[in-house]
Each structure stands twice: as structure tokens, then as C-alpha cells.
Image (cartoon, rainbow, N blue to C red):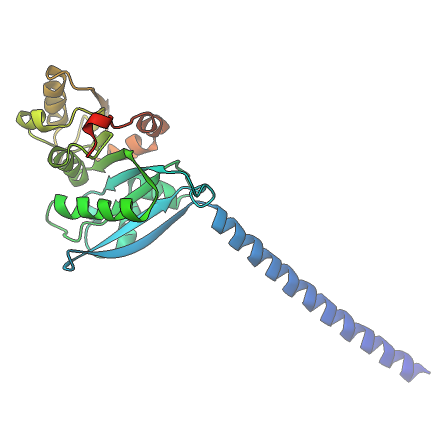
Length: 262
């Protein structure tokens, strides 16, 4: 009788262990299913690579708003972000160091797509032709509202913002150069779209006068431009500029006039 009782307990314990393990596996499986579902419904920033003219390779990050897949019939604005000199090369993760890509990586959501290419050159300026061909490719593949494409960049990317806008004035609804530079004498080439310029007063690399002078000239030309100068700030004006939600609210209000569209 005793032996039978012990044996019965052993069988019960074995059965409980099996049930317990099954419950653990079920919970893990349920957690994975819910996690995947959450990811599919959340915003995404993914890395890509493409060829320009079958010769120039360019890496880029692309962020899709969390409701992009849900609203299949809707077009979305797009922000083109140009990084600074320190993030060029062939390691796409470096592009997440500053600006909107960094904020996305930290979990911030935006109501527009964000295209963040990587300059394959570490000591050269941005190639405007390469950028516009990449933009054309993205516009073709995704649901983009071409009247609401915005352009921003920091440091060398701020210079690239001015240059790209001058060379392709019909493409962008608004500009936001951060601690960049452009000759004031070229202000006449700057498109007649809303512009918000940012700079640090103590910038040791690109003097604040670069932004002050071109903004002054743009105002003389009756352009829609404003300048924010950060006190006690050096070259890293991008930290405050891109952390300010008012920048993105301002961008979302801008629409390219039909007469200016390509």
C-alpha cells in the first residue's frame, strides 16, 4: 500500500511538472505573439541600401509613421534629414547619433516619413544629384505627399540643406538648416518657402555670422525666414533644435504651393 501511494505521488508530480512547463511555453509564445503584433503596429526605422545610376551605393534609414500601414489610401509628408560630417562613411548606425534618427531610435513618434541618407564620403560635401535621385526613388515606392516634403540638416548637412534647396527649389515645402552655412550673396537662389534657421552663438566651427548674414539678406528679399540663436551654445545647436516639438509642428503646417511644384 505504501509503495503504491509513493508511486502515485511521483506520477502526480511528474504530471504537474509537464503542465507547469507547458504553461511556461504557452506564456512565452503568447508574449512573442503580442510583441510581434506590437511591433507591426508601431513606428519603424529600418536601414536600406540602393544604387544610384548603377554605380554609387548609398545607405539610408527610413522611418514610417505608426499609422502608415493602417491607412493604405493616405499619403504622408516626408522629412529629408542630412547628417553632419562625423556620421559619414559606411556604418549606417552612425546616422542615429544625432537629430531625428536618434529621437526615433529612442522611441519618439512622428507623423511623417523620415528619410536619413548616409553620405558615403567622410571628407566631401553632400552630392545633390545623389540625394535628389534617392528622394525620387522613395517618392516612387512610398505614399508621399509631394507638396509636403521638408528638408533639414545639421553642420555639413546644414550646408547641404541650403545647397540642395538652391539647386532644386521646386521640391521642398520648408527648410530648417541647423548650424550650416551659405554665402549671403546666393540668397537670391534660395526658394521662396518658409525657412527656420538655427545656430549657436558660440559655434567655433561654423561662425554664427554665416546664418545671421544670409537670414538678413533673405529678409531684405522679403523671404519668409526666421532665425533662432541659442545662447551659451557651441556647434551642437542641433541638440536644442531637434528636441523642440515646435519645429515639427511648424513643418507640418507648411505646404508647397501648386505653382512651385515640379
